[in-house]
Image 1 (tube, one colour):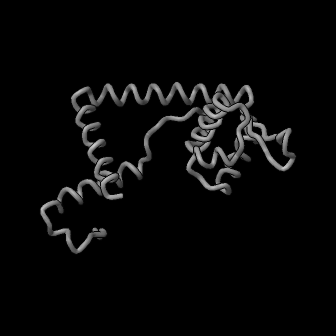
Image 2: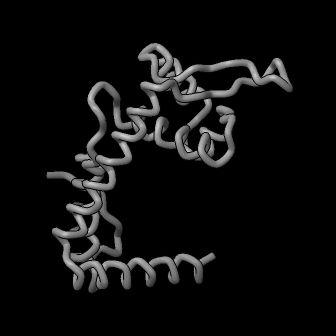
Length: 155
């Protein structure tokens, strides 16, 4: 089996590097495993959740806000919004104050899907945290804080 490696893989952490890389690839390949409501893709579920959150905080939601919140490109977002609109989960309307601008709103059905997505996410996290247990969670968070500290120190 061929894999990428660096010339320095003969160092004392080589086995850890390979194992971390393999586990991260497996996680990436299988996705986060986060369940989504029937009839929507993981991307659509994420965008619906973002719309619900922004709508609750700010009222009108502009696609540019969703691009930032969804960590996506305007083109990819446009395709997702078109799909959600076709499924009757959102509407896109011209903003009152600027006819060139568009606002996105959840339909009643979209709000139901957003609520279901939130419930599924909450149940998933509860199950995962129960599976890991308190000791593993404390270790994991300690390590995550150390990784953040390292990243901040590196600029």
